[in-house]
Length: 321
Image (cartoon, rainbow, N blue to C red; front, side):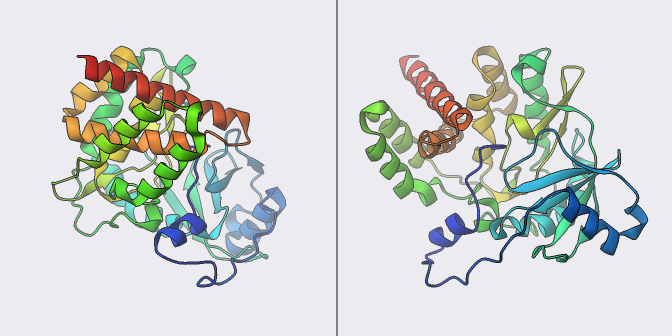
């Protein structure tokens, strides 16, 4: 979820059964700033060396992103765990884009490690728009239906050769059991700060359901920061770093993090989501809210609190119906 992601090499390695003794020390990452980007562009893509470089207004967690002129962006992974996203987006975005009803990023070039920076990096075409805060959306229900149409179209491209859910996607698209131990530890640690009985029941309900169909494409991080609006309408979906093929329930998280009330209902109806998949989507939001509630950043902590409130309230309403 944009701006609030806790995925990367350390988490993925632990889930794969690694210990710190198994892993080599991570490469040292220098300060990722305008000066570094200028040097990388000048040495590897000299045709763009005269273009101005400046940070984007709203950056992400996995990558540091900069404007390159007016029509391009430069994206540099912020840690080793995010490096697989570069080649994945470079390989699959051109395959997905022609089959989707909204604009998605267009990879233009792939950079190599250099100038003290240890990872590959990417140049994409700039997509104009504002991140999808509620106050920027003209009609939240119409927005929800447009987003549902996009997600319904996403599984259609042939998934057979796509990347199966795993460490590269922070296990989005995989079984929620991946995060069972972590979730239960968080519930125990938070204690009376949360409604323990309710969240435990929500988690157990999510785990009782599994994806029984063939693997399909998922985005993996459908959040307000990765949805762009123009004129109050959804216009583009960005940041496919967590995409892959598997269970698309993770893409339902937006129903509790951005949507509410009628817009949430319209979103579910447009996707024709059954109870099991809805429960797993709810589970993804519960996991994220629980593990980030104690975040030292007050904005992220507030987002986590909102997630938990939304999930618990909607679950209670569903049980009462």
